[in-house]
Image (cartoon, rainbow, N blue to C red; front, side):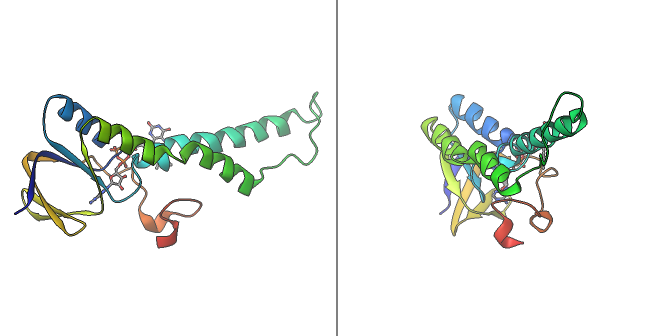
Length: 159
Ligand SMILES: Cc1cc2nc3c(=O)[nH]c(=O)nc-3n(C[C@H](O)[C@H](O)[C@H](O)COP(=O)(O)OP(=O)(O)OC[C@H]3O[C@@H](n4cnc5c(N)ncnc54)[C@H](O)[C@@H]3O)c2cc1C
Protein backbone atom coordinates (compact mmCIF):
# COMPACT_ATOMS: atom_id res chain seq x y z
CA UNK A 1 0.00 0.00 0.00
CA UNK A 2 1.71 3.28 -1.07
CA UNK A 3 2.13 5.99 1.56
CA UNK A 4 -0.29 8.78 0.71
CA UNK A 5 0.22 12.57 0.52
CA UNK A 6 -1.83 15.48 -0.76
CA UNK A 7 1.12 16.64 -2.85
CA UNK A 8 4.47 15.17 -3.84
CA UNK A 9 7.04 17.66 -5.06
CA UNK A 10 9.83 16.35 -7.27
CA UNK A 11 12.83 18.68 -7.10
CA UNK A 12 14.07 21.00 -4.36
CA UNK A 13 15.05 24.04 -6.43
CA UNK A 14 13.44 27.45 -5.97
CA UNK A 15 10.23 26.26 -7.64
CA UNK A 16 9.82 22.98 -5.80
CA UNK A 17 10.82 24.16 -2.33
CA UNK A 18 8.53 27.20 -2.63
CA UNK A 19 5.57 25.09 -3.72
CA UNK A 20 6.16 22.54 -0.96
CA UNK A 21 6.37 25.10 1.85
CA UNK A 22 3.34 27.08 0.60
CA UNK A 23 1.14 23.99 0.31
CA UNK A 24 2.30 22.77 3.72
CA UNK A 25 1.42 26.21 5.17
CA UNK A 26 -2.05 25.72 3.70
CA UNK A 27 -2.37 22.50 5.69
CA UNK A 28 -1.58 19.95 2.97
CA UNK A 29 0.34 16.78 3.69
CA UNK A 30 3.42 17.29 1.52
CA UNK A 31 6.51 15.25 0.63
CA UNK A 32 9.46 16.53 -1.38
CA UNK A 33 12.16 14.49 -3.07
CA UNK A 34 15.47 15.12 -4.78
CA UNK A 35 18.14 12.83 -6.13
CA UNK A 36 20.78 15.50 -5.43
CA UNK A 37 21.49 17.68 -2.36
CA UNK A 38 18.57 19.99 -1.57
CA UNK A 39 18.68 23.41 -3.25
CA UNK A 40 18.45 22.77 -6.97
CA UNK A 41 20.43 24.26 -9.81
CA UNK A 42 20.44 27.92 -8.79
CA UNK A 43 21.84 27.62 -5.27
CA UNK A 44 24.19 24.70 -5.80
CA UNK A 45 25.27 24.56 -9.45
CA UNK A 46 23.94 27.67 -11.19
CA UNK A 47 23.36 31.28 -10.16
CA UNK A 48 25.20 31.42 -6.81
CA UNK A 49 28.44 29.63 -7.74
CA UNK A 50 28.39 31.32 -11.14
CA UNK A 51 28.36 34.78 -9.51
CA UNK A 52 31.53 33.93 -7.55
CA UNK A 53 33.33 32.75 -10.69
CA UNK A 54 32.12 35.65 -12.84
CA UNK A 55 33.09 38.08 -10.03
CA UNK A 56 36.65 36.73 -9.99
CA UNK A 57 37.03 36.95 -13.76
CA UNK A 58 35.66 40.51 -13.78
CA UNK A 59 38.08 41.53 -11.02
CA UNK A 60 41.03 40.13 -13.01
CA UNK A 61 39.80 41.80 -16.18
CA UNK A 62 39.67 45.17 -14.40
CA UNK A 63 43.17 44.76 -12.98
CA UNK A 64 44.61 43.82 -16.39
CA UNK A 65 42.88 46.72 -18.13
CA UNK A 66 44.15 49.19 -15.50
CA UNK A 67 47.74 47.90 -15.63
CA UNK A 68 50.00 50.88 -16.37
CA UNK A 69 47.18 53.29 -15.56
CA UNK A 70 47.75 53.47 -11.83
CA UNK A 71 47.52 49.78 -11.03
CA UNK A 72 50.54 47.52 -10.73
CA UNK A 73 49.78 43.82 -10.40
CA UNK A 74 52.33 41.85 -12.40
CA UNK A 75 51.37 38.21 -12.74
CA UNK A 76 47.77 38.75 -11.66
CA UNK A 77 45.98 35.52 -12.53
CA UNK A 78 43.19 33.19 -11.53
CA UNK A 79 44.28 30.48 -9.11
CA UNK A 80 41.66 27.94 -10.16
CA UNK A 81 41.93 25.44 -7.25
CA UNK A 82 41.85 28.30 -4.72
CA UNK A 83 38.93 29.98 -6.48
CA UNK A 84 36.98 26.71 -6.50
CA UNK A 85 37.65 26.26 -2.78
CA UNK A 86 36.32 29.80 -2.22
CA UNK A 87 33.27 29.04 -4.37
CA UNK A 88 32.64 25.93 -2.28
CA UNK A 89 32.22 28.09 0.84
CA UNK A 90 29.03 29.47 -0.76
CA UNK A 91 27.70 26.00 -1.52
CA UNK A 92 28.70 23.90 1.48
CA UNK A 93 25.98 23.30 4.02
CA UNK A 94 23.31 24.84 1.79
CA UNK A 95 21.71 21.44 1.08
CA UNK A 96 21.47 20.53 4.76
CA UNK A 97 20.13 24.02 5.58
CA UNK A 98 17.36 23.73 2.98
CA UNK A 99 16.48 20.27 4.16
CA UNK A 100 16.28 21.38 7.81
CA UNK A 101 14.06 24.32 6.87
CA UNK A 102 11.61 22.12 4.96
CA UNK A 103 11.57 19.44 7.66
CA UNK A 104 10.88 22.06 10.33
CA UNK A 105 8.06 23.43 8.16
CA UNK A 106 6.46 19.97 8.35
CA UNK A 107 7.32 18.76 4.87
CA UNK A 108 8.50 15.14 4.64
CA UNK A 109 11.95 15.20 3.03
CA UNK A 110 13.05 12.28 0.87
CA UNK A 111 16.14 11.38 -1.14
CA UNK A 112 16.31 9.46 -4.38
CA UNK A 113 15.26 9.42 -7.98
CA UNK A 114 11.46 9.68 -8.33
CA UNK A 115 10.01 7.42 -11.04
CA UNK A 116 6.33 7.18 -11.94
CA UNK A 117 4.88 3.69 -11.63
CA UNK A 118 1.25 4.83 -12.11
CA UNK A 119 -0.41 8.20 -12.83
CA UNK A 120 -0.73 8.95 -9.09
CA UNK A 121 2.22 6.93 -7.77
CA UNK A 122 5.99 7.41 -7.77
CA UNK A 123 8.69 5.07 -6.56
CA UNK A 124 11.51 6.61 -4.51
CA UNK A 125 14.31 4.50 -3.11
CA UNK A 126 12.20 1.33 -3.37
CA UNK A 127 9.12 2.88 -1.69
CA UNK A 128 5.85 3.68 -3.46
CA UNK A 129 4.29 7.06 -2.66
CA UNK A 130 0.88 8.22 -3.77
CA UNK A 131 -0.24 11.80 -4.31
CA UNK A 132 -3.92 12.51 -3.73
CA UNK A 133 -4.04 15.93 -5.40
CA UNK A 134 -1.15 15.77 -7.83
CA UNK A 135 2.55 16.22 -8.38
CA UNK A 136 4.65 19.33 -8.67
CA UNK A 137 7.54 18.90 -11.06
CA UNK A 138 9.28 22.12 -12.11
CA UNK A 139 10.65 22.57 -15.60
CA UNK A 140 14.08 21.03 -15.72
CA UNK A 141 15.17 22.69 -18.92
CA UNK A 142 17.82 24.70 -17.05
CA UNK A 143 19.21 21.74 -15.11
CA UNK A 144 22.65 20.69 -16.25
CA UNK A 145 22.55 17.27 -17.92
CA UNK A 146 25.16 15.00 -16.26
CA UNK A 147 27.11 14.51 -19.49
CA UNK A 148 27.74 18.24 -19.78
CA UNK A 149 29.44 18.72 -16.39
CA UNK A 150 32.97 19.74 -17.24
CA UNK A 151 34.35 21.88 -14.45
CA UNK A 152 32.91 21.21 -11.02
CA UNK A 153 29.77 19.56 -9.75
CA UNK A 154 28.47 17.03 -7.27
CA UNK A 155 27.63 15.01 -10.39
CA UNK A 156 31.23 14.99 -11.60
CA UNK A 157 31.80 11.38 -10.61
CA UNK A 158 29.03 10.29 -12.94
CA UNK A 159 30.48 11.90 -16.08
C1 LIG B 1 25.24 27.82 -14.75
C2 LIG B 1 23.86 28.41 -14.50
C3 LIG B 1 23.75 29.72 -14.06
C4 LIG B 1 22.51 30.29 -13.82
N1 LIG B 1 22.45 31.60 -13.40
C5 LIG B 1 21.24 32.16 -13.18
C6 LIG B 1 21.15 33.52 -12.72
O1 LIG B 1 22.15 34.20 -12.53
N2 LIG B 1 19.91 34.03 -12.52
C7 LIG B 1 18.77 33.29 -12.72
O2 LIG B 1 17.66 33.82 -12.52
N3 LIG B 1 18.83 32.01 -13.13
C8 LIG B 1 20.03 31.43 -13.37
N4 LIG B 1 20.09 30.12 -13.78
C9 LIG B 1 18.84 29.40 -13.96
C10 LIG B 1 18.32 28.86 -12.63
O3 LIG B 1 19.31 28.04 -12.02
C11 LIG B 1 17.05 28.05 -12.89
O4 LIG B 1 16.10 28.88 -13.54
C12 LIG B 1 16.43 27.54 -11.61
O5 LIG B 1 17.38 26.79 -10.88
C13 LIG B 1 15.21 26.68 -11.95
O6 LIG B 1 14.67 26.25 -10.71
P1 LIG B 1 13.77 24.97 -10.62
O7 LIG B 1 13.34 24.87 -9.19
O8 LIG B 1 12.73 25.05 -11.69
O9 LIG B 1 14.68 23.72 -11.03
P2 LIG B 1 16.10 23.27 -10.47
O10 LIG B 1 16.70 24.30 -9.58
O11 LIG B 1 16.86 22.81 -11.67
O12 LIG B 1 15.74 22.03 -9.53
C14 LIG B 1 15.34 20.80 -10.05
C15 LIG B 1 15.72 19.70 -9.03
O13 LIG B 1 14.93 18.54 -9.32
C16 LIG B 1 15.72 17.40 -9.13
N5 LIG B 1 15.13 16.30 -9.93
C17 LIG B 1 14.83 16.31 -11.25
N6 LIG B 1 14.24 15.17 -11.62
C18 LIG B 1 14.14 14.42 -10.50
C19 LIG B 1 13.63 13.12 -10.22
N7 LIG B 1 13.05 12.37 -11.18
N8 LIG B 1 13.71 12.64 -8.95
C20 LIG B 1 14.30 13.38 -7.97
N9 LIG B 1 14.79 14.63 -8.17
C21 LIG B 1 14.73 15.13 -9.42
C22 LIG B 1 17.12 17.81 -9.59
O14 LIG B 1 18.11 17.00 -8.96
C23 LIG B 1 17.18 19.28 -9.11
O15 LIG B 1 17.77 19.39 -7.83
C24 LIG B 1 21.33 29.52 -14.01
C25 LIG B 1 21.42 28.17 -14.43
C26 LIG B 1 22.67 27.62 -14.68
C27 LIG B 1 22.75 26.17 -15.14
